Length: 295
Image (cartoon, rainbow, N blue to C red):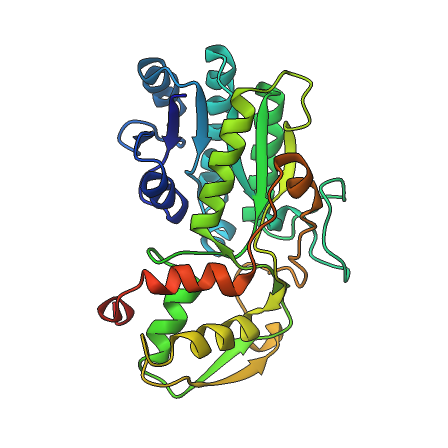
């Protein structure tokens, strides 16, 4: 099966390239979702049997003022990518976000719950989902949350860097979600690609499926877990975490209080349950070198 990955530099793309060296990885110089005219020629040359889209505009706060660019990449570009996939007869695996949900309530969101994004990034990602499914019905959309990796810009690496310089950190405690290792997300994408390649048009694999780490936590609790595991190997000591409210840490884009996702459909359709946070985080931390922490 020839797998083509769109994107090279992001957390997920890096993980996909690491886990599947045989995949053809197309970087922005070859396929730029902000320039839809680049999509068809590159895919026609690559002749994919399945496409995994690991490219996206992910600057949540900047999207409030760069709304046009966010929609160009996450919606218009994704729609063109899906049309090219349909023309080539290639299933599409596309990664979306918990931010398509409104973020209220006190239970995990199911795939059939109402979508109502509270920020521009979430709105652009929801528009991309709709565009993809309209253009290529044989699309698997994985809605995920709180992605972290041994590389790139993410919460784990930020906390380790801050911990190396500070004894006290203030971290939001009233937002809850499921931290998701980029390595596990990449494995989920590859599993979805494998299953999609052998599925008929009416198979249950198509459409939206939630995928995230198995365990729910807050940002503050996640930070405490990171520090408890990293103290010694990666940082000298665990800083004190002061749990604060969202109101005490304002950001340009609103953040959902509840980002938890019901994972039952993924487990049922793909036959694999997401890993616990402790296990997934251990894998990521062992891949980070002490010299990387200060970067």
